[in-house]
Image (tube, rainbow, N blue to C red):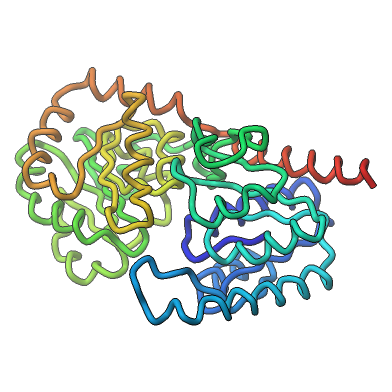
Length: 361
């Protein structure tokens, strides 16, 4: 298993490994990531071994850091060859990010069956580079033949956490857990584990606006910003650095504001609540905006760009909170896009590749 650099690449790899482990408890797993990146801590916490490569991504702007990239790539290709020779895997699975490039490229060159999983509606550089060499490409969005060979694509959806496939908590249980009034609507705001600066500024500046409109706010502001905003907690607003019981948070929510990372979009499609996406403009190839617009195209969400927040947010939010019909339409449409069996479908593709390779041998 290889993928990393961000949680958006690591979580899918762990989810796939977990599903395979349930089905094949005697299977052996080895993760390969980038040294000094978050996967080196997250993967061992999930119970798996990991080896690190000396690799980093290319800087998109001119930078002296790019001078070391060829040396890192050559070093990582040699290290990958050694890892594969020692571990002798039946299959290599990549979930994107520069950490997966050397491992998957080396594996495909040595005849090991390879599968990659692309989370976004706009393919990443690594997966585009690997596409011609691998056997199967699992994707979450339609029309991905723009980036990959059509005969290799299987639309499975993105792997998500098991507890979100069917949310068991009721709105009452969710509200009671967070100390919210069960008779008033709840806005859930999630900007990621570290936080989203512009979304946090928006919510903080409109504390009175939400109260005047009878809306309670459950706000995950992120670990970077909790000290700055925790004082805003009162009977109408609950401010958390991180929400661990997301099933209860989703159950409590009537409306959700979120970034548009691939995994967030996949989770919210399963949750099926009216959602306003505020894509981060600070990500590679603006893929969050592309993710959000792919959902908006199906009339399944609302989208506001960061630069339009001050001009558009209050009017859009008032229209949404005062229109049960719009809420119901968005909720129904986004549910249609959910892929609750995504992880199992990816596992089925893994099995197919391994079995085909065994038959060929």
